[in-house]
Image (tube, rainbow, N blue to C red):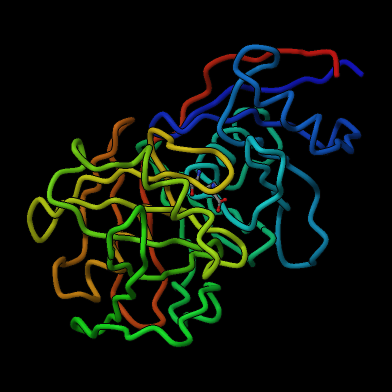
Length: 283
Ligand SMILES: N[C@H](CCC[C@H](N)C(=O)O)C(=O)O
């Protein structure tokens, strides 16, 4: 088939976005990997698929596939790109949109200034729901958080386990530029205590309202930005008593703003979303 797509990014986390309302698609993991391939295909960290909803009280369903071909529960930067896409393509004239994802309903909003804020829902903090198997580990309490020790490349590293619908393991490092993201990222992603693998966050505290963040993403490797990773890092930092909401998150691809009032309140993420070009590809 000749597939129409839009290439987009949110702070450098890049996407192939597909209107599956006006195109019938049903791709295999190999076809998703082809679309994500930066040499043989289009190239992207994730593919985002826009569908009509299955639930009554939502406007759209949106599905996310990592560049390794696997479908996942949530994508923060993707949620903003989704809003830009459905607005620019005339698929809605709403500015506040309810979107069904594999991990629940999120509520992105197109602001008057063209920025996009997404209610990402409340973080999930019980280890077994991240999911993370903490059994037999001696966690270390810090503020409201519990840090868990994992052996990574012969070193004991201490992580916060947070889910934003997708799993995150967040550690504080002194300098993100010096952090061993390429060496430690795959070991963390595939650690057996994360039965669904995990996104590995490396967070540097700049001050109580600012961090620098790198994320080695599950199923994609290091990306220039990770929206759910930014949410998870800020939640972990606030719970550890290191940060106060709102927090500016500087990533290698741009800046996100994350706000969270604690507890069961939702995490609010604001940031950019850019359409780069429309294209077609034979698949
Ligand atoms: N790699 C993630 C999905 C994409 C999340 C990220 N691109 C974001 O902006 O949240 C996972 O496997 O859970």
